Structures are given as C-alpha cells and as structure tokens.
Image 1 (cartoon, rainbow, N blue to C red):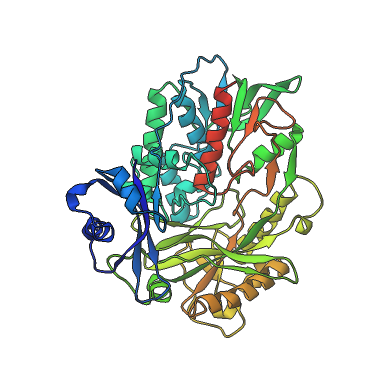
Image 2 (image 1 turned 90 degrees about the vertical axis):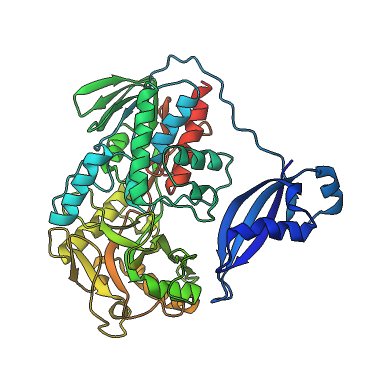
Length: 523
C-alpha cells in the first residue's frame, strides 16, 4: 500500500533530487527503506513573494508498511489504496454508431468506444489538422477566411488553437484516464503531475494527429469536409444522417459533439424540433500585458528558470446588477488570435505554445450575459446576440477582419493611454470599445477591471491593451438530454461536449464524451 504525503516544499534553486532525503528525515527512514518514490503533483505557492515555494505531493512505499503505520499517522500523510487500471469488457455490437465532431468530446467518445472493441464512423465538417493549419495561417496573414476550416472548425476542435489547458473543477474518476491518453499520444508527461496541466497548441496538434491514426488502425472510418446537414428519424428515433446535403449515412446511435460555433447545426436541430433551451454565457474583450509585468505581479520577479510564465484568475461580482466579470482562457506567454468562423464578424481568442515563450500574456476579460439580454425566447436568440456584436466589431475594425482595439487606460476613461498594439493578426484598428459591447457588459467590465487592480497591483497600466470582441466563451444554448444522456426528444441522439451546452473546456468535454461512450457500450 503506498503512502501519500502532501505539502512537501522546496525553495527556488533547490533540486527535486532532495525530496527523498527530506522524506527520510521527516519520518526517520533510511534511503533503503523507501521502495518506491514518485512525484504525484507539483504546484507553486507565491503567497509570500518573492519567497516562492515549490509545493509537492509525493507517493512513496516503504519496506515495512505496518511498522510505518504504527509510527506515523494524520497530518499531511495519507494511506492510499492503489488504483487498478480500468478493465473494459469486449462488447459485441451491431449498432451503427456515428460521431459528429472531432473535438475533445468526439475524440474521447471514440477512444472509449475502442476500449470496448466497438467502432464508429466519425464525420468532421472541417479539414485534417495539417490542412487546417494552412487555412488558419492564411486567414491570419491575409484575412482570407475559410468558413469550413478555421480556428473553430476542423480536426481537434476549437481547443487545437488554444493554450491546451486540461484543468477542470469536476471530480471525475476518468480525469487520470484522459491525462494518460494524452500522454500516450504524445503529450508531455509533465501533465500527469502539474497542478495546472496544459499541452500547448503546438503539441496538441501532434496529439490529435496521433489519435486519428490510432482510431483508423482500430477500424474507425473518418470523413473530413463532411458537414451534418440533416437528421432522419422514425417514430422519434434517429435512423440516418444527411451529410453535405446529399449523402445519406445510416445511423442507430449519434454522438453529437458539434462545438460551440456550429450555428448551422443548431438551426437544423431546431427545425427538426430537437429540444433546446437558451443558456447564459459571457462576452467581452481580450487583454494583453507584457509577460514580465505579470510575472512581477505574481512572483515578485520578472523571471526565474524554475518558474513558468505566470498566470492569473480574477473574478468580480456586482451585487446590484447580478452580473459578474472574470478572466477566462488565460494564455501566459501567448498570442491573441482571430477566431471568426462566419464572414463579416470579428472574434478574438488566445493561444499559447507548450513553452509559453511569447513576450506577452493575454486573457479574455468577459462579463456575464443573461437570457433576458436576448431578443426574445427563441432557442437561437443567443446565437443572434453573438452575431450582432461580432458584426459590430467587424465594422468598427474597418473590415478585412481587423479587430477593434484600445489601450486599457483609455477604455477606463483615465487618459488616451499608451500606444495601442496587439499580437492579434491580421491586425487592429484603434477604436472606442464601448461601441462594440452591450452597455451592461461594458460597465461591468470597467468596474471589474478596477476591482482586479486591487487583487493584482499593476494590472491597470498603459502597457496593457484590449482587443475585441470575445464572444465564443461557451455555447449560447443547451441541447436537452435526460439522465442517460440521450436527447429528450430524439432517441439515439447523444448531445455531448461544449457545443451541446454540457461542458466547458478540453477536459470537461472529453469527460462528457467518455460518459456517453460508456452508456452506449452497455446498450
């Protein structure tokens, strides 16, 4: 039986090789008494900056477990039962399973089905990641948008062009399964121990390609540039799909993982009377600071070889209006990117490579949007709300997908601020950002940013700039499902992931796809 020891600390400059000796000293052990030793988690305690501590959770085993138990109990020490890897019984299934969407929900649904010996047909409206990368680069360099292959659509989903964060607030037994799978397909092993695991957009692209190859070898059929355009039902049960308006694909079970920007899919489902409801979300702007400035605020020093690029998480609640402002999708050492998927709209997002070595930190600063802000009670009213502000931003930027931008001080009305710059491509146009946001969002953000300064002294600075607009924080609707994850109106339809309104982020979307696959395997 292994033992778990939490809150073991090192100072900056000390090597992890000291950890076994520290454990031996604490428990009066000799080095040979320890039969196994592993770092389970590594984090940073920066509360007393610049005296930064590296904080570890250690798992170890000793030769004489019973004697050790008698001598040491409580505190940061726990006895843990070793978890055995899950065993998946092979399932003989003849159901025609189709997975729509190759984001994390769709890919992990497929990987989990493969554990049971099942296969499926996977259809993805976008292109393979190698071709998708070229399409995205063309958009960023020349403003040439491919509405079928972009930051939102294509192999890997929207998360492929992100920081690749794998954090979640969920407590789920499959979190380690997801992390192990990512490592199996090429993610760095550090994600298994990091308190804030991330892969980075550069590594994530390689992982996605490896998953595709694995699934193909296991008998999955994958079709790119294959857009779901209709569903066929009989007595309330799905029987087939229409692909690209012409091809009919027989289907008994549909895992629908469309992503939060599949607006035409939402419209089709609504036309087919698939039950959906409006859902609150958030919109706002993307802020950029010099990374060394953020490091200085968070660590008390501009850099250190043992410290990663600093991040932050900020939140503000307005008790009078009931609205909140918060940071979202923070990208240390990253860049702001154009994330439009429809012509005539500007959408911002952020991404980082695994090394997070850009000179700038960026994050979305968003404020909550309530369903009462929408125009009417139609299920797609949130989509139209997003479109309205994306088109407003396009017009304010002067066209060709230039983004409206403003210095942070000017946004707050303090002064004109400094020179307006951004890593956003194709480029920016200096604009009063109050013109591209609903008044309630604009006012909440201004109050929130002033509150953030109290939490992070130096956050408000002439060196910070804002780019707009950030509208794709989550799905603007939810496809209703029951306890077995099937649509409440169409049997055999399993809406999953962020686009279905049931997850947020790579990890939670992957977990949602896994849950659906486990249920389908038991059918």
